[in-house]
Image (tube, rainbow, N blue to C red):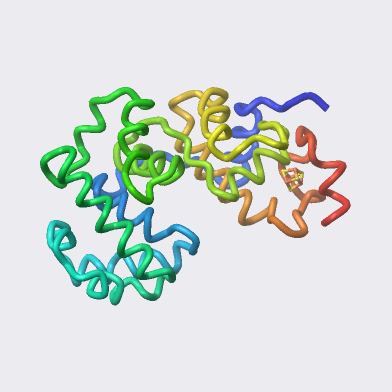
Length: 222
Ligand code: SF4
């Protein structure tokens, strides 16, 4: 089977789950903190951890000088609290040092690659975290590739099987029109959660089954 087009996939996913449109989430600094908190856990755990951190530190600049234990305490429900506390504090200190203030709005004036490069140089920030900040907070068409997007895109045949997750960001970004990146990202996650699960994907009832290059292989696992 030929590689499907991302526009055909998007059309099917819209049909199944409805349309999604971008709306600004948080300011970019808060989005960065939220995304670090979401590393290795679900939104169900990271969101309360973020809200508890916000309550304990109503001004993010307080995190610059706080003890790590004081940062870790409110975020412990999200797991890996001490590691994440360290990542958040180190990233914030670096932003303060490199930019002169705790503000990431200036990234909106940079070309995508330059803005992502700026972010991935921060401690604890990889391609996915950087892309989340750019896309969700600033509406810049960076494609975050999490485990759902990576799995579903591989199975559909959109990216080669041995592609690294970093390369997958660039490949998907190139194959999806900028104006569709947010919706594509959100609907691929939804599809990964509801249909194309890691174990026992529901290929028989999948809206994409007629264009999915992985159907023959994965339908036997359903
Ligand atoms: S047909 Fe199966 S492998 Fe392909 S996208 Fe659907 S659930 Fe995933």
